[in-house]
Length: 490
Image (cartoon, rainbow, N blue to C red; front, side):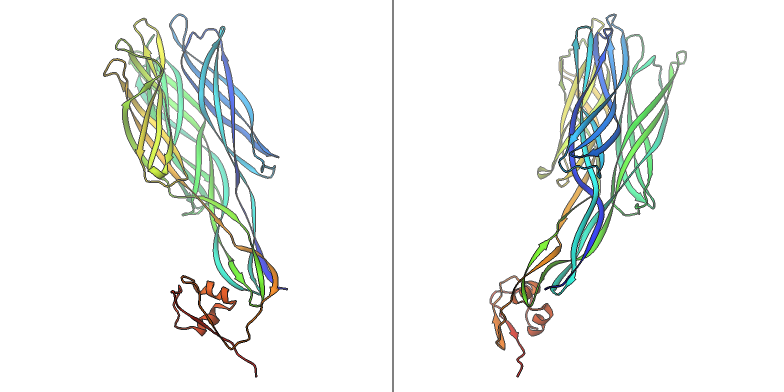
């Protein structure tokens, strides 16, 4: 019976993924005549893993800007809590779910005297849990040893605050605000994961009785999340969202100025990757018996170095309704962008979107959805996560009925590294080998074989094969011969 020695590696990492989708609806009353702009921001409240599913809950904050029957521009806000599930066959209560929520689409419809705003929410779920790997380290075998890289994930989370204060022209009321996070740097310091970036704060305001204005502010932030596993040089990834915001507007009508103060509460999640090398066996054979090897398999994941780029794009925008020279463009709000990486073609395909608020000759406002497609050349491999921030959009009508838009895109590409390892984990002994009793054997190996492949074919230790054939070069060339000497007992 062949004796073997094994060890077990115990770590923590991603064990699976799941996706969910749910629709959340909010009703507004009959005072709403025409919805000009609608926004929905979502905040995760809880998430737990159960058998076969992940249960999560959150809160959606709906904001609409509308025109009343008296042609006055007004605002309304409501919050709706929801709960949903994401199915996953491998999910169990021992796992830890990380849920990222995003608003995929917003629709508005009227039923009788009420207006309904529906937000379609998507959930991307990463499941983390304990991972074990049993592997062979030694035994009554000729072993080919190898160092295998394994990764342990360390989850962490935290909160931080950011604030900004700025002055603008006089405004009467803040109608709508939206926040988009742009993460610019993720790195480890001793004992903490550091996330840095900026929040693009977009504000739509009522300037006069019937005049709208929009403006933006980039609010920088730095979040330090305590993590014992964090060390300089270790790879990590993270995400930041605005969980709460408080805006204060102090207007001075005589001076024609307004001072705005913004206080933001940020929620952050991160993952620090610790790489460990284990010394295992990648191949083995016996000099006395045929053996069958079993291999363990472990999938590992991590992240590479992020790639950042900033591009200013422009072009003709597609509109949800028509415009002409009689329309007055008052404001651009709810700027956003989405993109997909086409790695094999070296392109980033996407679209920048916004809501254009227009004042017609009859004194009524219209909200027009515009979209500007883009295609950018990038140098990135497949398996990258893509995040895009759209800011600083401007629009104009050079030709009647055609709107030209220009916007700045801040793009972050984060490579997702994945690999698998397969060390030997078990050996099954079969029939004894039939050994030659001749004093000398000549073997013609396959061209391209190395010393290990040759030794395994001959069932001889590599050092013995090399000692018997000191002049042979590896890899084997076509036509070479290998001589095996065997000692004879007289």
